[in-house]
Length: 297
Image (cartoon, rainbow, N blue to C red; front, side, top):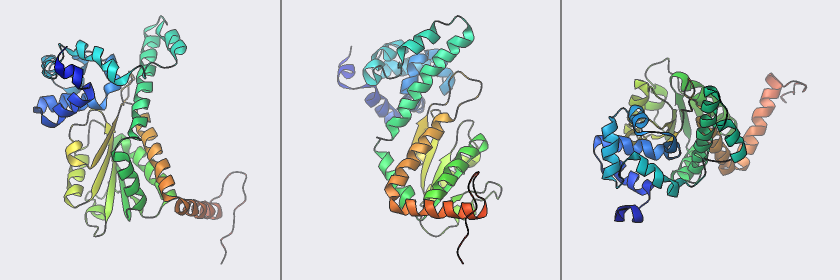
């Protein structure tokens, strides 16, 4: 074991490599940082395929930061993440012992999803979190956007935030110019949901928004290697759990955590808006089992 290994955690060394390494090293380090709890389930070959580098590059990178190979890095990873991904031992053992290949995949996916969930909740204690909460609670205009299959996540977040505060708008993708944000003269911020394969619009919009002085918060997956350079905060979550489609469940959980803290930051202001919005909904639409209320004239 080298002196570097005894004095620096894997997370510290990966952060250093992500900031100072070659282009390939930065890509590998960024991916590893954003998916530390998934690494026990990877091989050097699978990792190389995900990051789109050679397997040899993964090996060279591991040696450069003080490990014999990727397997050696994973052995030391336990010191950084402990046993958090391996929870509910009896149920997991039962799934692991299932005979069919399908059951084995489900067992592995369960471990990976639980590890990813821990990672999501860690974001709520990260240094960037309070700054984002304060901005989304107080900034006069909040714009939200999502691309491709992540549009639904953006719409959900925007609609929920509209219940808590005024000045929230879902960006119109059809217009093709994002003028409501980029031609806006007042203070504004942008929340973006995007996962691979990334829309060209997403990267261009994030870059243009920052050039216009708009703070950008990016909710994305662990493969995004352009987000850090085009956002003020980037929250990367696990999306691959041995299923046909990438899962966006952890992005939804992340947005719910953020909404909860925004509600707490707004306090009585949010409560008053919730009551007003509920009253308006009751007057115009209503809920099952409840009579419509009347708006006083």
